[in-house]
Length: 433
Image (tube, rainbow, N blue to C red; front, top):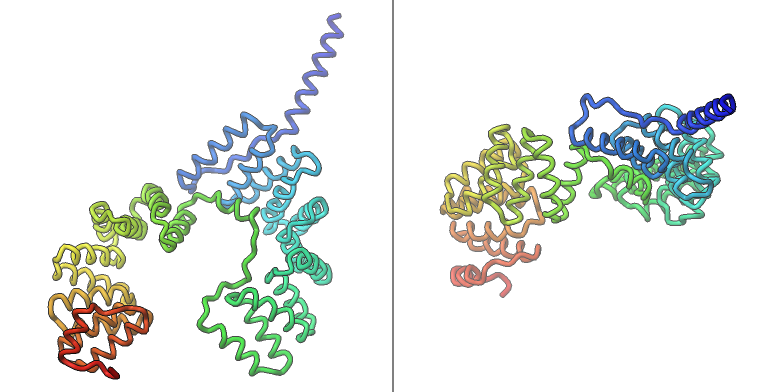
């Protein structure tokens, strides 16, 4: 009996070793030079993964978090582990393979292409995977294969400006400028701010010998922001990138929230950033501006002061302090802060306008007018500056010019106070009335 039990024990030990060998140890990146909140998050995910190493969702979450923070080789290990655990046909395998291809792209382009080909074969309905595979095939020198893949992507999503752009670029490189123009014009109609498309279309027209059309295409984009490549809706990659909690990414999100007027979201993000980067004058100044916008100037002021103490050239903090002093009626102090801000950010129209307002309230009409005219030149859409300029001009006795400023403000949707208009009419009839 004893020998038999020993043999069974050996078999059990061997079987257990085999099972455990199939579950790799989670990769633990070195925490040196890693921000503390990132290190804490990764430590937590590792501990959770060790409690349930058989759960592919935990491997995928850990891999996405590593990937989002630039730890791509460690992320690739996690994606492979998730794939090993996921059953055939599970749609999550697409996520794992797609992100594995992104992680491998820099170090192993053929391996990335193989991972994507397997993803497309198992789950062919995700256009971003086809677009990415086409790019990889181009980078590997197989342009015909890339073209066929881009056409597959376009069949799945006929409104894909990126697929049209990639196809147009291939046709242009192959010497078929007319076909390229047809594709690129469709792409530009869908993504008019994509500078890469506009530049390719101009090259295509130049290739036909019609340089005037090429110049017209470029001129039409001069007043547009340049978004580079056409946008792509890629929820898999977006979810991964949103796991990035490094301070540069948090700052990017905070600025986006602030620009969109989502002050509560911005406050949460800036509060976290202020803990991570307590000596970053830009972060403190922007956090203070959010608090001031939210109607809490008492909380904003010490942050503005800390920002100036850390960096006396912090223009936003100087501007914010000027706004606080102006609200209190301390006009000389406000003027000092606005002028200090303009020393370091001289082309900021809002600061010139604020300075003009403060000077106007001090009845210093000539310098006020100069500041307000500068604000209007820097921001031609600022109707409020024209209203204030009209007041300064009227005080200087330049009534006809004051009416011009009033009309310019009205054209921009800004109205002067009725009392001021009535007083101006007494001094000088409104032209055309």
